[in-house]
Image 1 (cartoon, rainbow, N blue to C red):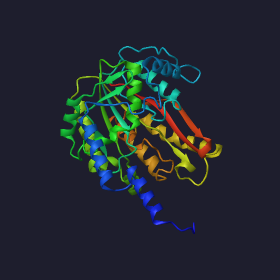
Image 2: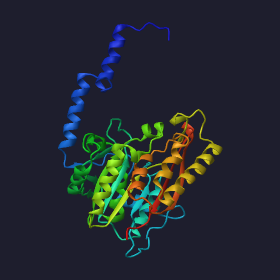
Image 3: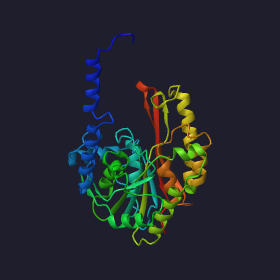
Image 4: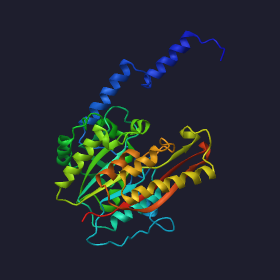
Length: 348
């Protein structure tokens, strides 16, 4: 700005950045080591966003989540159970629960209306994964204010043994702060309780490089190997299984890098494109799903592309049903996020 910057002021700035661990420095690497060791030594994964995105008190939390089910936007608090029918898959949002309340409620009311699964594979969107690993598992139980969801460590270890595309535990620290699985664990604990089933939490990192290259993820050695490994493990599984994808859809507007704001016309276009994309999910068409995003190089920034595609590949050909679609507008940033809940037909 044309002003002189005294060396002591510059030094103060550098020291402040270092104290905040913003610099690639010995202090940062020591802090990184401490955080990793502390997290990896834990038996459980704490609820990172309790108290910020949802209540920590169990009674208050139950009341808060129950209200999400209330009509007219919600499906009602007492879904009618369909005995003998099971879901193969569920697509649920990972937006803040208070913004996506009705869509979460429609997803988990559908789960409550079917026979409870004995094993739930959760494919969460990894917002922070930036390395070569696309899939990241953890053996840790997921804690919620309503209790701990037990992670099936034996299943995860068998899956890791089958997977030839990388190391499922190389980036395990990603689970520490990631909300996409945490929010599914929260609603599972409300909908099913904490007993009678176990979970397999897996984060799926960005497929952007494949979209940029126009390369189908199943043809990538990592994507193909993971899908094959999970299919094989599920084929040998005697328990009933549901695969949940914790995902959002479009991220548009100036907050996300668009030149234009997310006005009514833009949001209308987003919804049209989203619904066309959802038709591929309804048909159980993983390739069509990817091609629909690849045609404009993911212009809408589909946040759940990677876990949804993976889920569709594993459940290839099984039809889905749209339960709820919504768009959260953010006028201060002239932006919007879309999300949906869908059910994928039951195992027989």
